[in-house]
Each structure stands twice: as C-alpha cells, then as structure tokens.
Image (cartoon, rainbow, N blue to C red; front, side, top):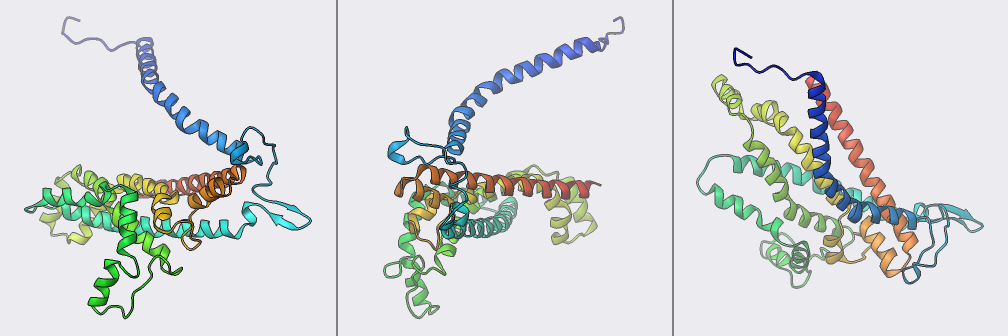
Length: 317
C-alpha cells in the first residue's frame, strides 16, 4: 500500500497458514509419538492382554483366555483372584501410605529449600550444587548405602543415636514391620526432595519482582506475602511437580526392593507384581496386578488434576 502498511491476510490465507502450521507440528511430533507407541503403548496393551490369560513365564506362546479370573472370580471353594488376595490389599495400602507421606514431606521441604536458595546470600551457588547430590546418586546405590546405615548391628544411625542417648538399644529399622516402611519412606524423602526443590526454584526465578516490591513498600508480612503472592503464582508449577512425584511414588520399586526385598511389611504394588511375574512365573496374574497399578495411578492423577483445576477456577472467579 502507499502508506507502507501491508494489508491484513484474507481469511482463506489465514486458514491456509494455520493448516501449514498444524501440518508442520504433526511432522515434528509424529516420530516422538511413534517412539512412545513402540516403547510404552505396545507393552502396556500387551500387559493388559496377558492379564486376561493364564500365561506363565516359560510358556508365553501357550496360554488361554480366562476372562476376569485373575482379578476376581468364584468357584466352589470361594472367591479368588487379585481382589480377594490379602497380600494385594496390603501392597496397595503400603503403596498409598508411602506415596502420601513421601509426596507430602517432599513438597513441603522442597518448597522451603527452594525459598531459601532463592534468597540472595554468599555461597548460594555452592549450596545449590550440593543440594543435588542426593538426587544425582543412583537409586540402587542410595538404597544399598542407607540399608547399611540403618543396619541394627553395624549401622551408623544406631551408633549415633546410642552415643546421643536417644535410644537404649539398637533398632532394627528395616526388620521391624512397624518401622520398615517409614524408614524406606525417609530415604525416599532424602533422595527426592532436591528434585522438588529444583522445580520449585525454577518457578520462583520466573516470578515478577514488582509484586514483591509493592508488598515490601506496603509493609506486608513475609508469611502473608508467601501465601497471597508466591504460592498462587507457583501453583501451576507445583501441581506439575506433585503429579510427577505422585506417579514416581506410586510405582516405586527399586528403593523398596533393594532395601527390604519381598518383605510383606514394605511390599508395594510394583514389588508384588514383580514377585508374581518373576518368582512365581505367573505372567497372567502378574500382568493383572500391573494393570491394576496402572489404573490406580491413572485414577489418582485424574482426581488430583480435577480437584486442582477446580480450585484454580474458583480462585480466578
């Protein structure tokens, strides 16, 4: 045009441009979706398929469909299947308790550590690097290290507590059914809190500073600043963090198995499924346990996201 301002694109041109963008996006996303289907979707569907069969580990090519027998069925002797197995419900209770305790403490401690690291003080960079050490250590190494530290005869934890006079005799942290699960949960909190702190710290670094300047000028107490400004602003990042941790905690396996093996006191759903699949070679029954674990995780995640979205919508309204 004469005035140097280009005309707005027509509606067909805009539609063609959007179509090109969508096609380009699908072009980039398709390889990732294919890889996910290969390494995640197909094994999941195969596991669900096996859960309706009587497949055994040494005879995967020779199996028959048994319907819901692996889940719950009844014969002349009574009910049997996963939902009638006392050990399955014990593993489910352990898993929910472990996930609830660890995610709660990791979230609270992670937010606190992130707030400290977000403040300006000398040596902050070194402290940030040191914070990541527990998270960087491989889980198997951490589990073995803590198993020795919690040993009732040779562990350093009992030695320190005895020297301080806090206990009168060595405590079997991993052998006592009343303490074993919480000892494993404490190790998970030690290891994974830095992950939560790292994600929350990244969210804190992105917050606008003008809100805090206005609050400081108005003389608002720091506690009120946290609950009225900081927490609402980092809530989206915090929701993602909690979901990630909830997914990890619900399917925990390596930490529990390395520290306590197949102990009933600490058995989680993943350990239970592994026992059925490998030790008992019951692929059908173990696949049913894995399928139920997948459904429990999916249900909890959907419920948590729905509740969080409802609260966010109420706050915006």
